[in-house]
Image 1: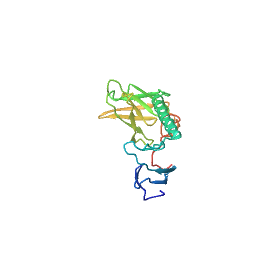
Image 2: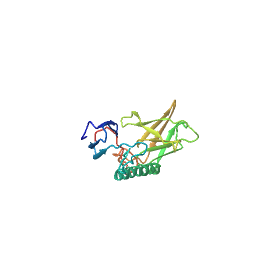
Image 3: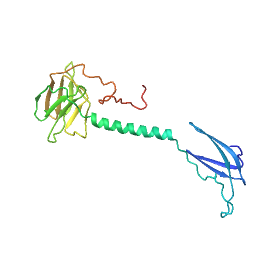
Length: 207
């Protein structure tokens, strides 16, 4: 601010309020933000009941529009929408292996079982309650595995693993599921998601 006595300046968040103090106050002002530098020429004029016409270059409010920033926002919005559509489309599992066999309590044996080389899927029709799912470790012990249910397919539970053998438990009901076409290599999932070309990033985590 050139003449600090002629103008009062009150910054509020990303707004800047100016008020002339002296008569016919005129000065220059420079505003520096984290991204840009703005230069203004300030002048104040009296106008009583329209007796003195206001200059054509007098403004009571100044707003800035940045076409490049707006274009970048639109591109980002379009990218998010494209990703949502892709997730919706590509989230449908494509079976690559149906060679699953089951033995045990009929109460927990799934109606269908398959995998897509990333996840294993068990379908339970007629509103059957989903069992807990365990993987059989090489030493014969059991480990509970992570699962999820897609709202679009509420009758199917997705197991975040492919294993040679799994155990399904619900109360006293137990069933063993054997994957006779088990591939220990499978498909890697270093991106943290099952959608090709999409990578999951945890905010705040070191990369």
